[in-house]
Length: 268
Length: 251
Image 1 (spheres, one colour):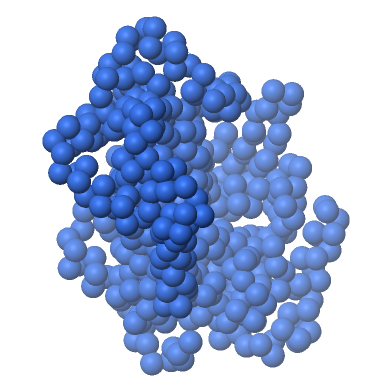
Image 2 (cartoon, helix red, strand yellow):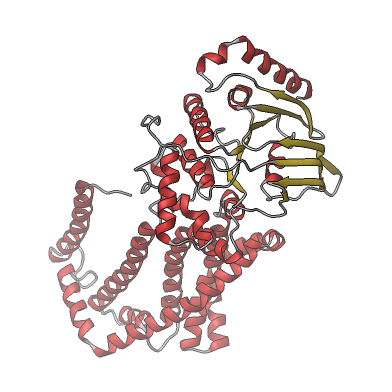
């Protein structure tokens, strides 16, 4: 992977992309019983913040993210993104990055990145230009003609991020995007994501299982617990930026990670 | 599947060796030449047969039947397979039944087809259709199931319409499996039609082959076998070629 310091950052867009979650609940009705996936969740995410949702399996963190993406309806409460409710997906407001398997294997990297634009009938030349910019931003200049199976796991996720950013939405939602990557790649991708975030000024909401990843990336960590899914803690991470590998072994970092761990151990 | 030059050469060598063995067995009299005419004689006979208008008519008859059966069975099977796979309830109900139906040798129904349709075009097309439709339904079901939920979610999150999802996600996901289905269906279809021709028919290449066999015309019989084999292989390879072009991304 080439170094990325020489990439010109995109101009950060106007401060947009606030997310408000008000008393949101989600109940899955099954034949035998009702399962409360989320209960009375309220959350304020300010524009441009990097917010991480952590918690054990079944705490509803992915469900909450899918609601912010308009991919799933809540049973009660309201969610607004950029000031308006989001009853269905709106790529102008929200870009979504999924786990590894989400690229279309029959399309090249650039065609994958262009996919959201192609859906809206954007002209070929404009699409290509925007895809090139997005690929450059994620450090994949020159890899556009490759198919996903010719890319490493980390590169595939870079393509996914480029696809999420290609329409320049104010909000980027990421559902365990690095879960399938090995540890080194995961660390590198974390740094990469922070660089892209700093260059674009997006609001990022990031779901993960990894406590280290959570503290390393976030301005703010939201800790959730299962049955029913609730917010049990909100931590401000006041570590300086840019974050560095050395911080991982620092006391401040350790204290934050321990605090999250105590919540999770209690509920697991 | 990438074949190196040496592997390709080895394949060609095996084919040549089979023909050489065939020629040798017949020429030396190790096998009675009346039972096994030599390879060169057979190929000469094949050349002669292809000049004959009656044989060409037979080929045309068979081709028409095969393509008609195929043209009915594939879209119909694909539609049924798609509807089954798209609906959880239908899928649960129908899938085991399809497996039952698929496991039955279709040839045992041939006499019924003759009784219902009489001897002729309808009987042969009908039986070809019947031999093919189950494999098409089952393959289409598999093809639909090969569409990944993640890909559908991606399409939805970027605001794809139903038509866009169909053409940009379903179709390309399913294409490799569908092409394979097409290829295998044709094998079943060809078998069905030719079997029907051999069993009871007045024309078609299967009927000719059966007649040559009954009349102990070994040269013609073998030439007919080589001819049908070559046609079947050509079609198969053609689709396989399209398959590899369309599914290079599959690993």
